[in-house]
Length: 77
Image (cartoon, rainbow, N blue to C red; front, side, top):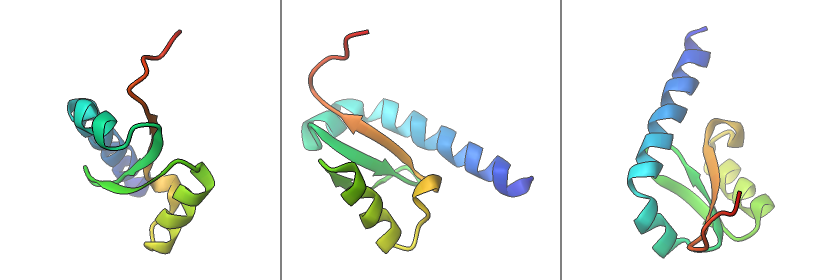
């Protein structure tokens, strides 16, 4: 249970960090996927599979990071 709570807490903190830094992230990583872990960009790539491989090569389980696609183009809902 502690592991699950820790993952949820870390994911929430990473989500808040990303929200606060979204303007910078869009400028730097436009049209790329980013992997955020412990309030930092762990890896980035335009190809999702390559991004997940980069994360795994760093010894981190890709399921334990926040992965988002960032773009300067506004989302249409």
